[in-house]
Length: 250
Image (cartoon, rainbow, N blue to C red; front, side):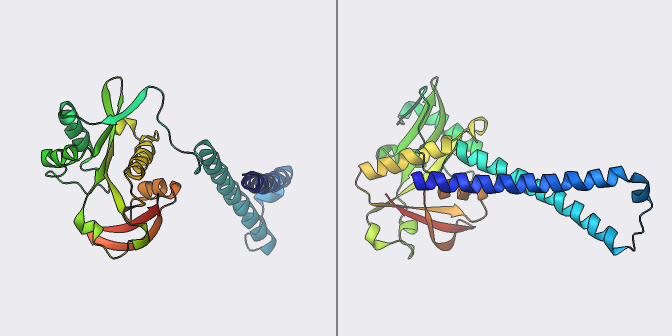
């Protein structure tokens, strides 16, 4: 852990130093130009020296933008470190779904349909899907103030299980599916919390590994799964979409 912290600190220090250096260069160029504004306005664009000055200004502005975005990304990563196990808030409860939750779960599923990279159709997930999950005690929901905010299912899909990419040494492997979060609750970490809960539940049930399919263009989901250490072991085309095959040991 100390090594990780020191490397992160060094990386951040170097990035900060680069940002400061570029900012100072930009300030120096601006001071030089402002101090001699009259000559600047009379610059001959054919003069190569002036081209160098313009290029330096462009590099300074570009460098400033780059380092600003990098520092912003670093702050976001520090706020949600990859090795931190997602945990529900005190007011959130993850519980097995019951028959009484059916209509609310269907509404949650319906809210996902039509969103970018969502492979669900008008006929899926359906009441039959919920029946299948409830019969296996495989559907879990996150509730807050009595309302369902998110859901996840432990899946059994023979077509996915037969794909040739999975590591036989991790058998038996489980699968998570139908990870759904209310639109107004998205980008708050609930998806990761449900993923972590699902993996813990699979491990509790004796599974040694987990595999999942992720739309290869769904950058948001790809970033989410990268946090958990999933590896890409193959690609496939199913349900009219191109998927990456993700797998990891539990």
